[in-house]
Image 1 (cartoon, rainbow, N blue to C red):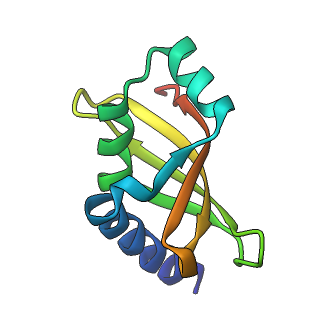
Image 2 (cartoon, rainbow, N blue to C red; image 1 turned 90 degrees about the horizontal axis):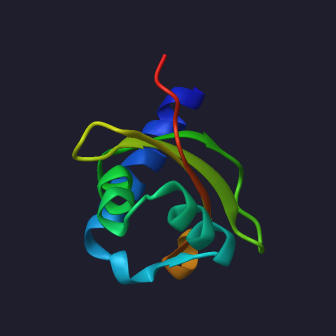
Image 3 (spheres, rainbow, N blue to C red; image 1 turned 45 degrees about the vertical axis):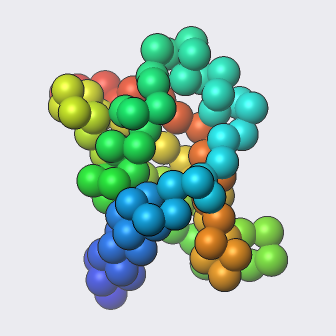
Length: 102
């Protein structure tokens, strides 16, 4: 059951990142992490457009947290924590990191 839920959320994420990219915000912590880890905006957008939602919680008035794993054009893996407001068409990136390859 949860795989189906994550597939639906992944479909929503990919569509949202393609059509409503101006509604994706960045928490100051995420901006600092991007600078420190040398992650650029193009890499983040690519990961959102092609990534998978691997965790989600039920949305309430404060939104919902989703964890997304995606890859950049250079095949670097990113882990992105999003705060999602589906009814307001808004997402905020709370944290971002490069995933370690195994």
